[in-house]
Structure formats: structure tokens, C-alpha cells
Image (cartoon, rainbow, N blue to C red; front, side, top):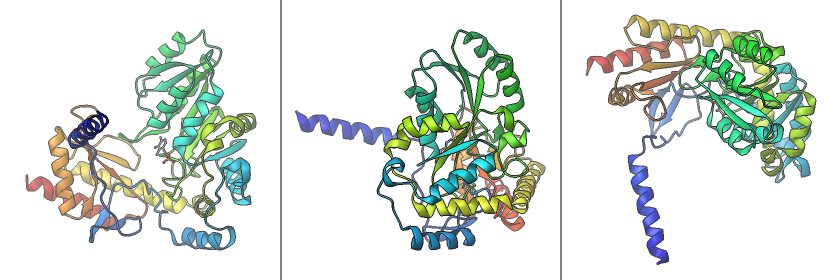
Length: 391
Ligand SMILES: *Cc1c(COP(=O)(O)O)cnc(C)c1O
């Protein structure tokens, strides 16, 4: 009977949800920032992608308020019908200049940018060679294309070379990688990837969502950090992390690539324009990034301080320089217990366990922001120590 099937589904879903490891959302009643209010209580926030502390930046908010008065709230249209304002073109031009590319196309999100690009560019004669730990949106985007698929072990250049050899019959090949892998804070070895791409006549695409704004001397991300900007064919990224943290994503590449995406990329054609206020906020965020040496320096100093203090206290971290700092625990239950303990010490941080990370590699992922003060960081470290002493 119809209702039986419906109840069966509901019962099944309830069971799956109960067994799920993803934590239910905490309700934050303040603006985003290093200090937040969760269910009425103050917390230091160590799990936002708010690397430069721009999510509640007064300059951005002022720009957004003006934009609301001048450009309104919503556009009620996709870009190509009547959803393109001067602001959108300005933001695309600014991203192009910032990333040293030829042209940029804005998407409702980076998920959409990655979801739309592969189907358009890569056909069944072509091959996409993808790092196994690439973001879900890249994986989904590749699924939507008819291209042949090859996958290499995370940052493993020997395996990438093997895939390049195995895919040699393809007409054109595109290697795609996250610039930074979000669970580990590890950087993709872009120089080595570019070397292999050149050796085997392949192109390279980098999704720089966890780097744009703060990696590299001017904040242009991992290609700048590694000095390979002119060797990367395509860059995707988000406005939803360091660049103000609201929403929107983009692809920056050669003009012909962007032109064809404007005509064929489905999330661009069939999803609403980024709202004017968000575009204005992003424009202001890019201004702040442009003059953001101090913010980037503070972020680097903060991350270094946290890493140094934690390591001298004997905690196990994944090594690196990125403001994503995974604090590793042997067991899943330890990670969860620590996250709870931190919570009662007023520190908001999240435990990740299998299947989000490999079995036995449970961790608390601390994310440092330029907005954290030295005192905030000391408090976080002190909380880890206190939780350990109570165990
Ligand atoms: C966050 C992230 C995305 C998604 O960005 P949205 O703009 O939120 O859709 C895509 N790729 C990577 C690597 C990310 O870290």
C-alpha cells in the first residue's frame, strides 16, 4: 500500500540519521567571528573558514549597506536574462586581475563552478585525472561529464605519472586538484604537478577555495605561493571562505574557456545570480585582500603560534603551514571526547572521524583566523591541556 511504502522510507531514514556521524548544527545567534554566541553562551570559534576575519568586517558591511540602497536586494533572474548588473562584471574583472588570468565567470557557488565546468570542457575522447581527496563538487562535476576518469592517490606524483601514462590515448587531458586539502591542511604539490603536466602534455586545474585570499604574497592562492601562476590553465574558487565568507564561486581561465562556460555551464545558465549585496561585499573583500599584507602576516603568525604551543605541549599535529591545523587522536572516541571537553571550556571546534577521514585518523580540525588574538590562541591551547588533564 502507498502509505506503507512511505512509512518504510521514513523509518529507514530515521535509522540512518540516528547512526550518522555528522553532528547536528549548533545554533549561532551572533555574527560569524572569532567570538560567537551559541545557544546563548559565548564561545571562541576555531572551526570557521574565516581565515582573514572578513566575515563580519565593518568595511564590507558598510559597502553592502550602500549596495542594498543602490542595487537592491534580489535579481529574480539568472545572469543571461536580466541578472547581470555592473557589479557582477566589475567583480569578474577584479577576480581576473587578482588571479592573473584572462577572464572570470561568477557562479552561485564554487560547488556550482566545479559542477558545471567538466561537462562543458571534457568530452568522451578526453580524460580527467583527479586527486582522490578532491572536494565533493569536483567529484560530482566529473561524474556529470562523459570524459574518461583517472584517479591518483592524494598528492602522489608517482601515481599521477602512472595515470598520465595510462591515459595517453585520450585526445586531451586535464589534471584537477584542490590547492589545499581541507581535512589535512596539506598543499597540492603544484610545481611537480605542472612538471608532469608539461611532460605529458596535459592541462592543470586548481580549486583554490581553501587558499584564495591568504596564500601567496598577494593572496592569489597556491599557484602564487608556488610561483606557478602561468602554468595553471584553470582556477576555481569560492567567495564563501576567506573572501568575506558569504557565497559565490568562480572560474578564472583563458577567455575562450570562460566564454563557452557562459554559454553552456548549466549552474550558470539555470541558477539565480549572486545577489548584489554579496557581490558588493566581495568587491570590498578583494580590496581588503589587496592591501591585506598585515592580515596575511597575522594569520601566519597565529597559525605558527598555535602549532608551536600545541607541539611543545606534546599534542600530535599534522605538519604544515596552513591555518587548518588537525590535532590528531588515536581513537574516534578520544576526538569526540576532546571536542566535548573543549566545548565546555568555551572553545568551538569540531571532531572529524571515519568516514570523513580515514579510520584511525580521527582529529579535531582547528582553523586559525587573522581575527584571533594571541590570547584567544592561548585559551584554546589551555583548553586542550585542561581536557587532557581531566581524562
Ligand atoms: C568549500 C569548497 C567548495 C565549495 O564552495 P562553495 O562556494 O561553498 O560551494 C568547493 N571546493 C573546495 C575545495 C572547497 O573547499
